[in-house]
Length: 326
Image (cartoon, rainbow, N blue to C red):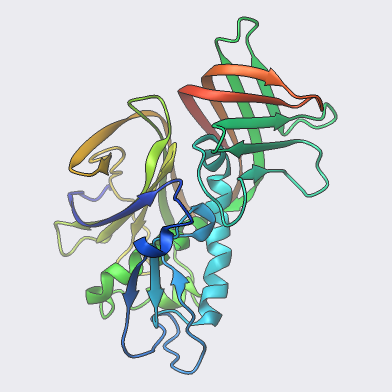
């Protein structure tokens, strides 16, 4: 039986999807504990470097933590963040987002001749396709009015995505540390949950582009006895990912899905709604993995061919994002 669901927003942070790295030090915000102790393993003896609160691989150079996460636990959690980054690889390219260094690029392997790469400075997406491979496909109509770009990605662990989201939200739930005692052990792979409840939603801004901010939201259930007391929602590019955090690790019930309720991104004092193109619900075991195929239908502002045979285009308007899982 579905559980009654009614959440209210308790925390929200965001940064631009493409930041000015030359000035990001002036914008740095650090969540800090004055007594060094890892909030995951409890250690006081390990090294405590300043860590990114949101994934650096998805452009975060604004939010950091200090004296909260030891180096050993951060290395474990970085593996989980890798699953979230792989989920959002094409979003990062098409939305002209940032990565750690250089321009975002997708190649299925280092030996693969096919690739997709963006250049935010020139507002271009470059596509190089080797006909012997089929994991990248680009079709553009003869009149250049419509394009379809499809990639088949590598295997992604669902549990990695759920843990990456929880890791981002955990510092904002300090008051709940004594109630959700299983979370630290779960994040560093000391125990498993009975099931994962995750939603992946495809969303497009009113302008037909990716959402221009990266936004993290923490939602709390109105019912203090709910088996899913918190919802952690993360906006990136053309995708919104949300994880229902269970009260205990052995919860087997299914929440009433929140879906697009309350879905909007914020810029300054204004709120903007998004258009939903498709969504996928997961209620699965921790060992579940999938391969994703993502298709972007768009209206190119111009298509050009380089001397090496690769194609580049300026993406003017996205019509639809379709994400499938196998």
